[in-house]
Image (cartoon, rainbow, N blue to C red; front, side):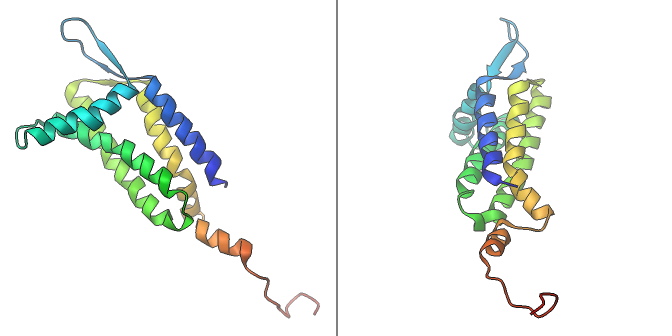
Length: 165
């Protein structure tokens, strides 16, 4: 499996998810509110951490859950950057595994705030999973990118069995 076409597809889906409506929150007076992914990312990466850090001990659980959910964006970018080095496959897998509790925190926030995820959210999750597919496939098929690289460049060894020599 060629890893880079899959990673580029993941990056495209990730980018598109920010332009689409990601959540629908119950309205407060003026009706329901729809937030695009870019607004969710801003709230989760800038506003909520500021609120949690500015009032330690006073921030509510929902703000904390939003901050944890927002870490997925940083993890995604870290995995993408670490993809340039084949030897860091285990590091990428650890970071990918760390994304799972972040998704759970996001869904806990949705349940607590009666927020409905929309297409942008689903694409955001799908892009993170898609980014991990090449590394998971290498792990499942026991052919790490490192081993595959060495197999391609290894010199043939002479063998007396079955070669007719």
